Image 1 (spheres, one colour):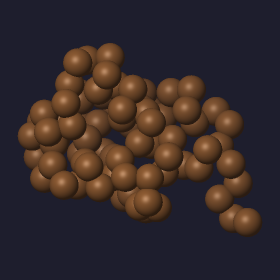
Image 2 (image 1 turned 90 degrees about the horizontal axis):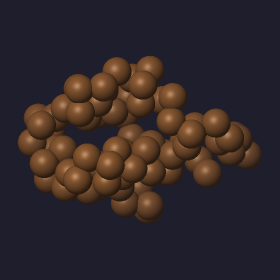
Image 3 (image 1 turned 45 degrees about the horizontal axis):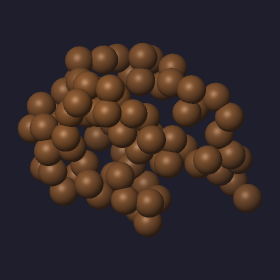
Length: 80
C-alpha cells in the first residue's frame, strides 16, 4: 500500500469507528466535502500534509496519533 492509500484508509477507518460521514468530517475540519472525497478517490495520488492536519484537527487527534495507525507500518517504496 502506498502512503496516499494508507492516509485514505486511516481516515476511512476513523470515520467508520466514530460513525461519521465524510461530509461531517469536512465540516468539522473546515474544508469542502469535495476535498475529503477527492482524497478518498483511489485515482488521486497526492494529498497535502496541511489537509491531513486540518482533518486531524477536525477529528481532535494529533498527527502523531493519526500516523500511529497500522496502515503505516508496512508502506511500499514510493520511489520505483
